Image (cartoon, rainbow, N blue to C red; front, side):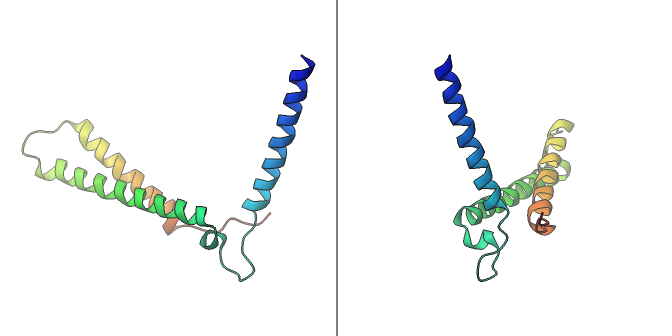
Amino acid sequence: MDQLGGQLGVFVRVMSLANSELWVVSHVKTTSVDRPVWRTNPVGMVRRTVGLILALTLTMVGGYLFVFLLFFAKVPVKIMFILGAGMMLFGGLYWLWADYINAEPKPEK
């Protein structure tokens, strides 16, 4: 039992160290040449690029399905399909708005 307690203590110390390093990294706003961190951090650039591609895809597919199912479908369509397409469209538009259109830098603490 004492060995387990020692291992948990090491785990807690490692996790608290990792959290403090993540806190320091996440609160760095600019580099030495005053560029935003996401422009110099390749992981941040990849995350933003993948997020933009997914948000645009979700918006385009949701919009296409919503308009097609609502106006151009040859057979009657259940309302659940139209609502699903509308939710896809809304989710994509909200993702774009929240992460790219209305993106503001986080306030410094």
